[in-house]
Length: 111
Image (cartoon, rainbow, N blue to C red):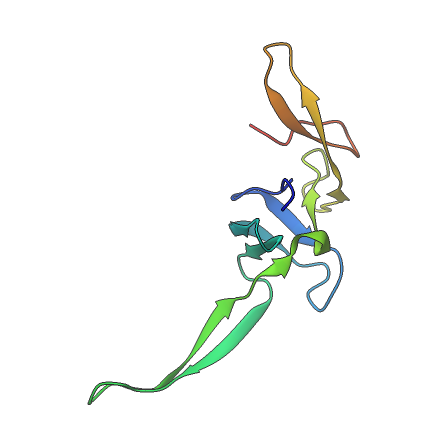
């Protein structure tokens, strides 16, 4: 298990795979599997059978986890209409805090 550079609430872009180019907010992080769940990306459907009398069977859509290596942070310094993916680095601030930094622009990712 390695340290994840992606946290819940981050804006990310899918860089490879079926959903390449899509972007969204990280809803959940699964560090033990090195996967993330992104809102509206990697949608799957599950057929749910009716259990109780009078209950309707239905098709439920949900976001499946995607491997963390297939997503990249969106550079905070990129233009609003043209998001650009960036790698993540770490930096120590003057007050001793360790923060995440966009490698492409040098902008802080952490608030």
